[in-house]
Each structure stands twice: as structure tokens, then as C-alpha cells.
Image (cartoon, rainbow, N blue to C red; front, side):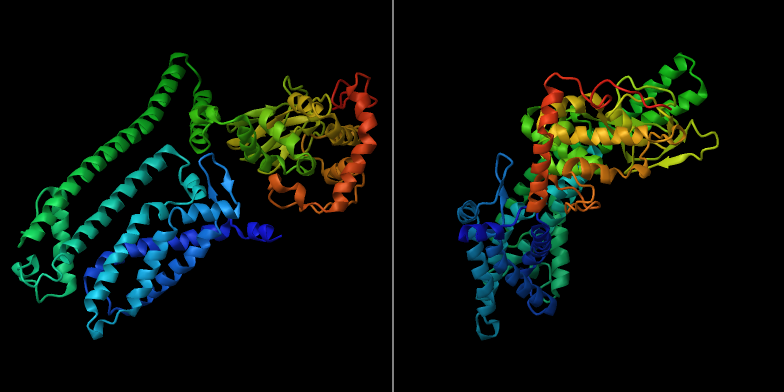
Length: 560
């Protein structure tokens, strides 16, 4: 019982509480990276600095138990949440380091500068520079934030160059503060502060002079000469470090600029080839403009949503992980449909296979026709609109008002459950991104699990029955709200259209843990429903002819 309690206390690395804590950790790290080197100067009298020092000490003290309660992602990509493993990893890595630094932070407040302990206080503050050793580890953004900031190659390149510039500015600041810091306590030797006549100047003037000296290092010279041996050694070491860092960063910036130029030049070259091809074949201006707009939209979509085939490392990822990937990509969109939403809760593993094998991304350009009235899809599939707008016009109604189809809606559901001839035309009003569930692939995938296929068969029967009872002039390829699909889906799965299964229709779908959210009553209802349908499933998948033509097989064609 105690182990279970401890396990519930451990936070997932992507938990919002942990992300908020990491955000404050980032703020304090950046603050200390800037302010800690300034401890060489007399900034201890500033009230803001004193308050921030106290808050920082409290924060890093609380950070120690927080690290004991935070899971981590191991080398294999799995999230480790077992308390014993979490504690062992932290104790063997940063625990001693953090305890020593927090102890020094608290010891700083025990040092009394007015009673002759000024040098001890200064030493305590300087030792806080050691915390910057952990800067690289703690300054790393959460993986979810990194994924958001890495949506396009150009964005990654620009952010990388910006990171280099910020680091060089901070390095300039650090060298300047340390250049003044080596003068502290040198009473027997002349320092550069005295040699330049700044001994009676304010800290601001001394810092600006040191900053100009530090900036001169990156140009290969300096405007301040070293006044003693210690300063000469520091000057030589600084030049050496700056030389190595500059060489590495200049190479990195040059490489980034080359990548940026290639990324932008590649698009221009592709459009040039397209225009030349259209001109050589004397394509009309109207068609040419549409093709160029379509190509521009497709290129934009490719940059925003990089195709899976272009990601080389995805081919190395295990099949189960790719199934999880496709499930998280497609299911939030597919779950807008009542049946697929409830079906995914009760048959999660089966829907993962559907998302992996049967769903394709489809893009339409403005003016493209998805389907026409009287057509039969050679490869039938149900469309889910991810973005953009389409216009649907029914052929049966002469004066029918066009219907707007937008994000979160679907079309062509009847092709999933029966042979279907389209009742109207669906045309893209804007550029459209959508996903299509292939009907044949869905039926074959579901048929591999006959027990759970019973749910889909029952829904298909109810849907086609409702479709047959619809007057010809009212038939539509869109969602028919008169059918009450939510009621049909609940009846097919739970056997009772009015049964409240506790599913929030508007909730976002976190399907990996969805089954655990149902009550015992709901789960028992599903089990009873499966038992009642098992005989029918055995008959249908055992080679006998279905009693319901048009459901997962050949059958009647709905009239238009």
C-alpha cells in the first residue's frame, strides 16, 4: 500500500505541474547566470538582489525533494515512474552536488559582512558560480516544448543561431566580471583598475570598462593592458578559450547559414521547374494558377506537417511504437465521430491497428472536387476534415442551399457500411487538410477480431436501416443529424441507447488510459453485449451468408 501511495506521488516528466516547476527553474537559472558573476562587484546592498537571493535559496531547497518525486525518460524512451528507480538515479547523479550548493547558499546568509566576515561572504557568493556547471542540464527545455519549437527546419536553424548569439553575449559578461574579480584582494600589486584610473569609480563604470575589454577579446585585441602577472595569465587563458569557442561557433553559424540558404533555394528551384513545365506544355492560365497555388499549399503543409516518409529515423522505430504514433496522430480527429469515439474507448487496441493501417492524409486545393453526385468511389473511404472549408451541394434538391463543411466535420460515411452512390458534390472552398479511413481496410482490420467486430456490425446494421428509411430527396453524404448517430453508437455497443456510459462527448481523447475511466456498470454492459452478439459473429465470420446485406459485404445500393 505504501508503494502504491509513493507511486502516485511521482510526477510524469510531461505533467503540467512538473512543467510549471521547470519553467520557474529556468527563470532562476537564467537569473543566476546573469547575477552570480556580478557578485564580484558590491551588489549585496541592493534590496532586489537580496530578495531574489532568498527566493532562489528557498526554491533550490524545495527542488531537492521535487527531484525525488519526478520521473524521467530512460535511454530507451520509456518513462520511469518507479519510486526506487527515480530516487536511485537522482542520488547517483546530482543529489550530493545540489545539497552542497544549497548548504553554501544558506551559509551565505550566516556570514556577517559587518563583523569582519566580508571575505567569507564574498567567497560564498563566488562559489555559487559552481551552480553554472549544471546550467546545461537544467537549462534544457522540456521535450514537449522542444517538439513545438522544432516544427520547421528554418525555425530550428534560426533558433540555433539565436542560441549561439545569446551564449556569446553571456560569455562576454562572464569574462568581464571575472576580469574584475581577479583584482579583489590584490593589495600588494597594482591592478588594471588602478592603472586605468578607475579605482575611485563606481561599479557601473568599472563593469562597462571590463565589458569593453571582454568584447575586445573576440576581436583579437583589448583596450586595457594587464598590470600584473595574474592578470596576464588570465588574459592569455581568456584569449585561448575565446579562440577555440569562436572557431567552433563560427563554423556552426556558417553551417546554419548554408542550411538556411539551401532550404529556401530548394523551394524556389521547385517552383521554377513547375512553371517551366507548365509553359512548355501550353497549360491555360487558369489551370496554371490553380496548380501553382496547390503546389504552394502542399509545400506549406509539408513543412508544417513533415511526411512520415521523409523522416528517416521513423523507419528504425519499432512497429508497436509506430502504431502508438499513428494512433495519437489520427485518433483525436477521428474521435469527433460518435461511433469511433466510443469504439476507441472499448476497443482501443483494435482502433490502434485501424489508425496504423487504414488512415491516410488527404490534401485538397481550393476548387478541387472531392466527389461528384452519381459517382461511386473506386477506393471508398470516409473523410474527416482537419482544416479548411468545403461546400456540399445535393443533387436531389433543385433549390438546395449549399452546405458548409468545416473543421471537425466528416463526409461520405455511408461508404463505410454499404455500397454507395454519392448524392451530391463536395468541392473545396479553401485549401483543405483531411484524413480518410479506407473502408475496405477498416473492414478487413476489424474482421481480424470477430468478437469486437460485433460492435461495428451492429452499428452498420442500424446505420443502413436508418439510411433505407430516409426519403430519397433527404439522402446526404454528410452527417445526417436526424439519425442521431450518438444514440446508434451507444445502442450498438452498450445495447441501450439511453445508457450513460460516462463519456464526455466534448472531452479531448486520451485513449491510452480511457478504459480505466469507465464504471464497473459500463464495463459489465460491454461484456454482456459481447456475449449476446458472439453467436451472430461466429455465423458471419464462419463462412455463412450475412442476414444483413450491405453490412461489411456486398448488398443493396442506397438510392439517390
